[in-house]
Image (tube, rainbow, N blue to C red; front, side, top):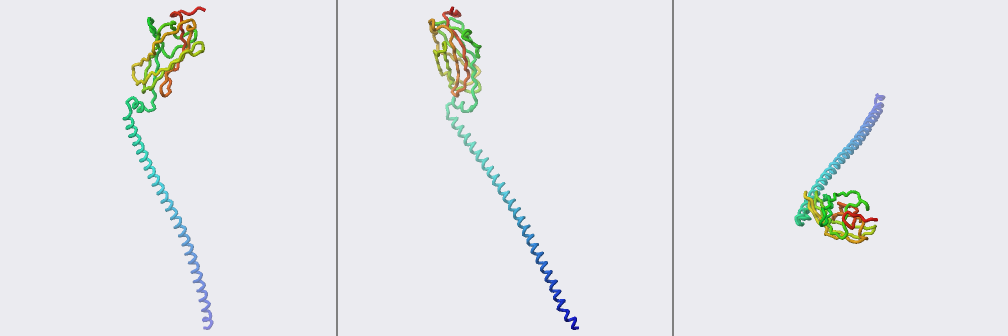
Length: 244
């Protein structure tokens, strides 16, 4: 009996050790579970925050794009209204030019005609044939009256402040230069005519011989529609060359 009683404390100690060990295991499992839950919760929070941030950014971009489109539309509308108002205030000739924008005029210089009293008009198609000092484009008699006429067309849009420049050289020396304002012309099918003032050819031995000419038509924007060179000569009589 005493032996059994003496063994009871030993059994109690063993039971206590088992219980203590089980409690410790449970605590460790609980700690591990808590850590696992914390990690999972943090990951879920990060995912939610990222998604929320992405949604906010996307919405902001959409709003910004909408605002930009509205602003651009508003500005274009204002510019259009302003342009129309200004266009209505301009004179008709200028208003047409503004409305046409950057569209360039098409001017074609078709021909040059040499007129002289008592002589048939000599019509020379442009571009001119090749000329030299010995093969001139036309001949004038010394001391005679003459007039130059140009025929040209305008298409596409209005040409503004068309100018004509005429330069003449004799034996390498410039002897004459003329610059004329031709005018402003609207497009039309019918050709325009431009005539220079009537002139008189010089007379005398030193006035006879070949002359070199450069003719140009340029508008106010610097567009050049003709830049042609040719020779003509002045003789003692029509068609009579000087004898060497």
